[in-house]
Length: 251
Ligand code: F6R
Image (cartoon, rainbow, N blue to C red; front, side, top):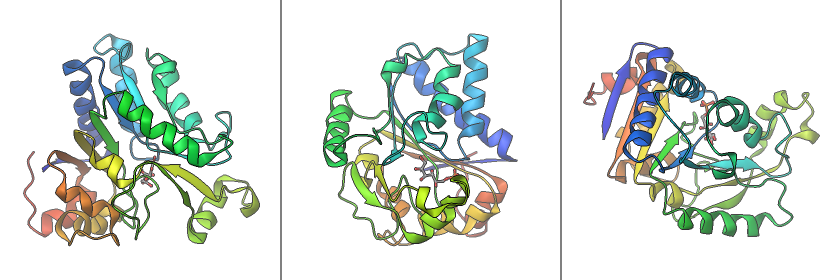
């Protein structure tokens, strides 16, 4: 595992964007596994800048996103498809037909999961999977106690997640989706390379548990210790716990 430590969020985002960019340059038709959330936004902004400058091209890139809420349409401002369109896809020269997010509006979410699993296989698997990490060690919507052996599946959101998310839905709990479709830990672990991004002191403890603690379903991201090609890119604040605990910083 490699750990890259940056001074702050901006420099961390540039490092992450450099790694994604290198993947695209080495394999122009690569399959990128993408994530939403606040952490990757800076990296996406950087990629947009480089593409506009002509340093990078997404014309052949294919993408698969980690997750989506059940019941939210691509036009809904809180859907992950909307997030990806706004923060990346609409701003770069990617062919939108080559971008994939689980369909939250599918009549049968279980069938949608099977379709998504087959799609990832047909694309030849994921070359580089980008991940953010939750405070409880979740990756995608794989919350603590999630089974390690699942591909894309439907999850029921916990009461605390629903409550926390209500701020994005007019503070109205009844508007918050109760289920989501997520790639499972197995799908994530099958990616050839994994890039984890983390920023802020509030991520410090969970990064120690994830990368220096026991591998266990209580900390879903801890399974990443078993992956042969993981790069963690974080800012100083996020990595402070790992540094204090003696983790070897690559750069
Ligand atoms: C995003 C996702 C989530 C986030 C995680 C961290 O598609 O599946 O697991 O990566 O919640 O979110 P941020 O980056 O907002 O801290």
